[in-house]
Amino acid sequence: MFGLPDKHPTDAYTFDEAVANDHLVPYKSIEVPTKFHTKGIAYKDLTPEEQAMFEEEILEGNQPTGKERVDKNALNAWLFNKDTAIQTLQYVLEHGIRKRGGDEIGKTIIFARNQKHAHFLKDTLLDMDKQQFGNNYVKVITHSEPKAEEFIRRFCDEEVERLPQIAISVDMMDTGIDAPSVVNLVFYKPVKSYTKFWQMIGRGSRLRPDLFGPGEDKSKFLIFDLCGNFEFFDENPEGIEATVSKSLTEVVFNLKLQLAETLKDDTLQENEEFQQFRQRLLDELHGQIASLDHDRFDVRMQIEQVLNYGGENRELWNHLDNRDLHTIEEELAPLVKPEKGESDLARFYDRLLYTLMIKRAQTPETDRFINDFITAISKVAALSKNLLKKTSIPEIKLKEELIKQPLNEDFWKANRLVHLEKLRAGVRDLIKHIDRDEQRYVTTDFKDEIIRAKIAEKDFVAHSGSEARDAYPKQTASPFQNNIHRLEKIIRDHEDNITIQRIRRGEKITQEELRSLENVLFDGQVKKEELEKELGTNLNLVEFIIQLTGLNKQHVDAAFANFINEFQLSSVQIQFLETLKQFLTRNGKIDLVKLFDPPFTKFHPQGLDGVFKEEQAGRLIEIVKGFGDRGGQVTG
Image (cartoon, rainbow, N blue to C red):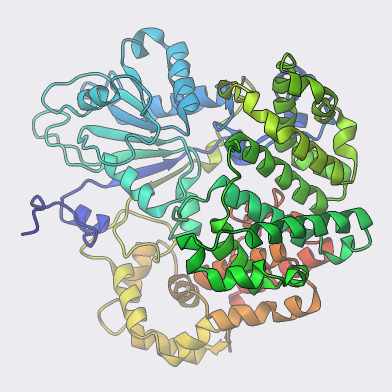
């Protein structure tokens, strides 16, 4: 009717329904964690030989403190570890679905993090077996690769079996291709967008009759998750959808604002240098808004706010509240444009240095600052080293001594900000002289290991989306006879039930009230015994309801009210709490270890401990523990 092919799923036609109606094939996910992908690379955990490599390749000859660590997010972004790649690729080759005959792996797409990563994986496969994986058997397919479209056509060809057999893609094959013979997907990069994640999964879901011989159709495909994507979407069911990309100019403006707000902290009020620097930052920010061209259409659209924050009222910037900050960051910062002729590399350097200034202000302990932010510090040092190769350029030669400063560890030990600002202001306009292809990449060969005990294999189960829930083992079940699905619908239909409302508010209920609720929910459509057989465990109805519907927002807010009133919190701490409260409202509880993982590490690499003081962190842990104690919610 609307020009769509027959049996083609639409946005309203879910993956669950398409699988149930035999229009798509289901998947089996295999989560394969490694030590480095889980915890990063700690210098102290390496062998003496590996430590020597760490010092040469990562510290670039600088003396180690013994506390250095490469964050797990750096893997495959700029650091590529050969042993990690060999072990994970070998696992995929051994456990992946194979072609008919079983001699070689079936059609496989590897989703790589970037082009350098893609070529690294291909080179690793060639090192493992050049005879098998050479001659276009493995092909990197990216927008910058020659004949990329031709190799996609060959990969997707269903009439004639053609190479490549393994396609390593960077974005180009995430969506929009139709390759029914694909039976293995390898997620070798983190994905945050729920929509994109399911589009990528769709690359393996197409039907393929007779794939393994006459009458032997494709019945499933495998997803090897090497970067914790399924775990991420278990915790963040809606994902983090991509938003309109912010310009570097806007990012830098907001970083300057964040730095100024950080310096407002009570613990820094007596530091005269910090406070003078704060006033300079606010003067610059106010000046940028005051100098906006009122004839620009986008400025006229926000003219009231432009006049309010950019007029004569400079004093307003000294006392910004959360509403002011939101207005400035969301409505005014996007209006700021770069100065004419300014290099984007200069703004990149601004972003790097302002970020380090914020972290330095928040981390007065010198050793902790250097250890926690060694990656960013190393980037600054690497840029200086590259600039020092260009001293034949007069303006670089003139500032040679300033450029050398980040190569001295004492420079980073100084508990000041002015020296960082002097470096930023003096070097930013020189960064344009660095060759763009000198971006720092490091290849290592540290011994990694697959954490076998944590390999998780899960069959796809058709249910009502993200709600039905993760506390219970997932087992293959008929999508037509799913008691879990039915109970979810019944609970939603009775969401106004007084007992369900009290459960969502965290109030105690009696055993009699619980039995009465069970009588309402198990009214013949669903039998409790059959439901528990599907779950593979006894039903905890209170837990089930909270995981399905979440907690009442007012109940969650109330739990944190005394804490918020007792402590004067910074803007970063408030944002951390808001994220935590949203998580609790949606999921009902949170494992304490998650407070030290994304998304909480976006506020500080050490998560909870980095954002809050020891006393505050201890109080928050006690509050969070209270949400996990459901045993006391049913009395008598």
